[in-house]
Amino acid sequence: MGAVACSFATPESGGYTNTILLTLISARPNCIWRDQLGVLSSRCCRGCLVGNAEIAATEKGGEFARGLERGRKAALALFEKVRADEHFVTAFAPELDIVVFVPKAPSVSEASVLSRQVFEAAARHDLHLALAELPVGLWEANLGAMKRDRETMTCLRSVLMKPEHLDWVDRIWGLLSSATDEVAVARH
Image 1 (cartoon, rainbow, N blue to C red):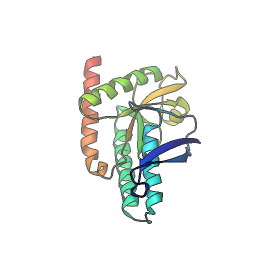
Image 2 (image 1 turned 45 degrees about the vertical axis):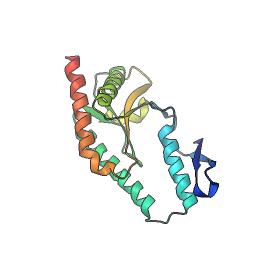
Image 3 (image 1 turned 45 degrees about the horizontal axis):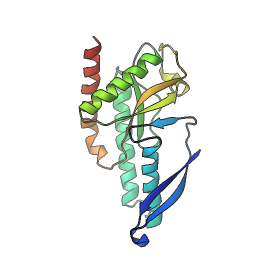
Image 4 (image 1 turned 30 degrees about the vertical axis):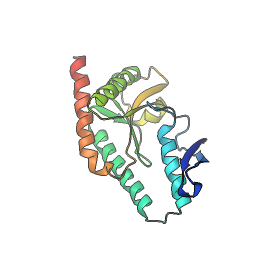
């Protein structure tokens, strides 16, 4: 459990910024989320959306709920592609819109290095992922013979929080595959 403050402007505030404090509850304790914008940035963005939705008093099954559902469907679709691919290992199915995975490697250390390389290659292909440092225990059921030489593993993280991401899953997968192939070629 953690807390984050999000700031946003509402029409009622006359353009002034309102700040709300959100409590984040994670089913996966001790996760450290990092990306190019800073710790917890995507959680904060989603929190602000939730905060705005509560202020706007959206209704069940409304536009906001449909958008969240499309984001979750996109995450599940990407997760299934990653899980079925021989080049990757997944930790767990997405609870909402975040998919985490690593390239298969002989060791946790090597998988962490490959994650960084795929992250950089993906950016060159205009696919902007993030990196997360997660405890190896979250991956235990899926690591197989991978040597556990570290307590945490650097993994790739994709956040599919926009409704239109559902329409882009195949394109995202194509860019990820190209970036992964680029890293594989460079290593050999």
